[in-house]
Image (cartoon, rainbow over all chains, first blue to last red; front, side, top):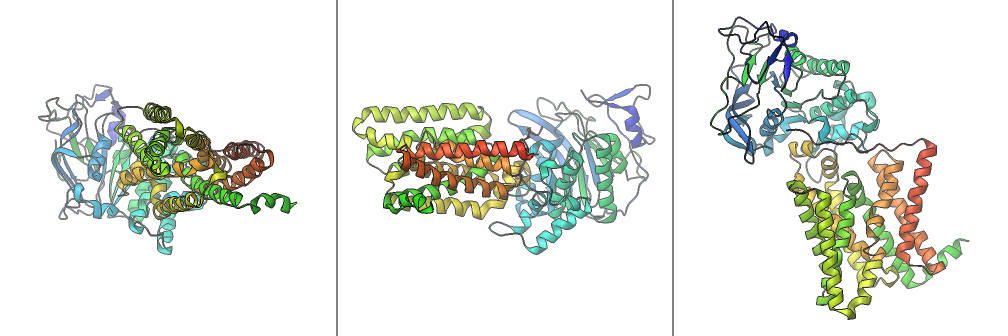
Length: 299
Length: 284
């Protein structure tokens, strides 16, 4: 059971709500039983609501064999938004990212990325940058930092071709933007956890994505390295990629709420019959929709 | 001095042996890089042992043992890979079962056809000094195919071995590459059997690459060292085999092992500490 301290949730700045479900006299919030129905921040940005969403998911159910990973998920992410995906272990956060990448097949519901289903996304794959969980790659692999970042250009370079000078320049620029250019000749295995994550982030940026997906990017990092990574992300949006759409899976509600435009809560415990999710356990909080109190969208 | 070293290679059979050993060694070194970083060493041993069934099948049926061995080994590699990816059985269990089954098939075929026992002994322990022109041509073709595959898809293979999930997300055809890599490993092993034999080919495959892994933290250095130590092992092993009349395959593998031991000493005293592979499965 994942419990989140209320003082962490304070960062979400709960707004007046028809039915706030955060029991203020409780020390913890049990996400399996409670719904955070409100949340809004004071940050604003250019409203891109007239543009079609980059990620548009409705009533999505994903199963792994007989096991329903999650069901009834509905939300959308507009261009330029930073959406945090939060929830306990096993709720299906990583699977949700895989569904967006087209690596997990929906059992039902709709999912559109850049206006088309991920199964037809092969030609558009180069628009998506992906930072997988730390455990998915070999930390001790015999490659340099530059080699790792260059892997992000592979979709652009294409099969049977070698990276050109332009690719090398883009990779160097990506490393520079995450503050890792000085590490480019270092063996990847010699980096600290925070440096590694920045290099993997540079790898994702090297593909010049329009959608960036990060899966638990701060796992295993100390508090300072976590703050540094989130600051790096915030800086990237502010200084270089104001129109980049970002989705981050994380347990760090506090840190995410500080930089996110939208928080998407996914809960564990889909109905065994797969009919519908426990209404109200999955919720979306638009932290930029200051004019629409109660604008959360339950899935 | 140099003349004394080169004198044995005045003989045509030694020239063919050297050429076969160098070709097999270089090919093994390059494919073994992926075997080491993808942690498929045990798979290599399993494929080589299982291939006895395919080789014996070819000998008994009067077909080319290398061809039947390559097909048999490739199928074994695909089945092990499939079971490993499917997750229904641990990879090491699958390798143990399939390698033993393949060997058992080979042993039964040998026992049913005693007249071919001598030929099969050559496949078990290698017979590099008996390499024919046809063997060399087959080796050139196999090496060319494997090196062309690696050369064409090197960056994708590197990405897949480093981060399979990330590679898949980037649109790299991971499944196709994985099974192609298994096939390349299988046919490389079969090609090297003539040099060192089924029993020793696993060590011939991974020991030079392991030496490279000890001494270098970059894949370029690792492949260069691996290839270098493999070629040196073949050359010195052949010389020792000629000079002391000892089995050439065993001599080559022992040279390779000696260079590995030397690399461990060098890394210890030079302060080169190879990074250990660290990877865990991402959660759902």
